[in-house]
Length: 501
Image 1 (cartoon, rainbow, N blue to C red):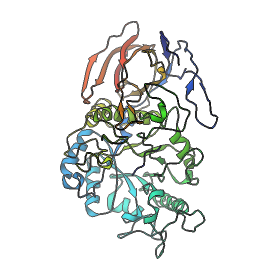
Image 2: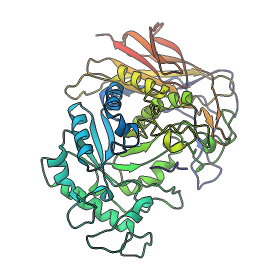
Image 3: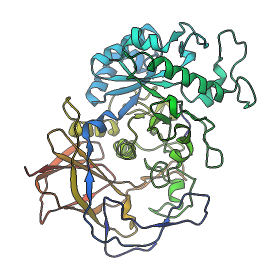
Image 4: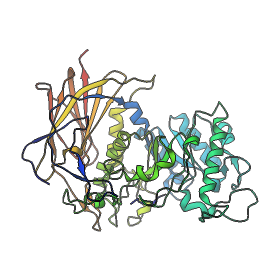
């Protein structure tokens, strides 16, 4: 794992459109991303927005597991954990290992429709080819995927985990007596090693047609880099399908000019909302994506821990954030997001490392598990051919409550299923925590009164809402003068829109 990487109130309705008619920003420090907007009111416009596949969104959801951790429920209660995983509805887990037990579990999950994003770690006995050092059994990745596990179980291979934190455990070649080095002048520099390992892994997987469809995910980093000290990785764009980062949000984002909002003195610095470092101030993209040069970025780790200690959040806030996290990441073009992690490893309430789970250590669901399960249940689409999503003509008008004039923080994601129905997901992307205090100060922002203005003909609408426990309720929505009125909250709301035929 895992190191968290670091106005005027207008008494009128502000219009926010889905084509980004937001206020321009001004910058007080030209070396930092801008955060302070000019006050402007967008004129009403029609917005034609292309939907994305609802199935593709569900397919983007992944959770980290640790099948080899025999001192945790992953090992001690595997069958019960497996049933919880199936019930959640996810299609992907992220894990590693080469033991017979881990291989058997990956195969079983594959048969159940849950594929593994596999961490290729030489320290766990697997590497690119026989010229590299690896612990026994020293599998070659192509043979392992093709003959030991199968592509019905593994659909992506990730090149190690947080190499800049773990290089000391690794040698480069067979017979090497020294470990990798952090010295850029050393022939054993870890950056040079990971460049070579990634290149040879890509060649090994892509040279065999039977496994060439397996995605190659670039290496992740665990240290915190910044605008003056970006990712040290070299150009890997030709030897990966997806780039990789671990944009944990719990530490805020200090790489911008601070401003006060939502009762937080330095909003982005001290906020912990899911998009704090990937959206309007996309520090994580800016700093970690350059080595992958335009390849889609995946987040193989991200999430929150539920403790009362530094940067910990309550289970209630966790339940609000986790559906929003997956929605935000998909909205930003991230094709796979792996929450860290599926369950709390130990019953240690003060240990942050033990409390990242969607499930508690006794396997009871936290609100985040329930909310995510319900989100998936509404948005999942039956298996079948690919869909070419259509467009919907709509915009949003939002009446800002006092103190919450940044209506651009009401986010939307338009999805569509194969039956033609649209699913418009809305949420207030606002911080529910102030990380400048310990424990984190919890914030409960007011709802954002919103109208969905429809220009496309809609026959009926249903609104799905989540409560603080993650439970789902729904009701028929009234469409008056082609408008749907609702309160957008800090929890995901889904509007099912059935077009007129």
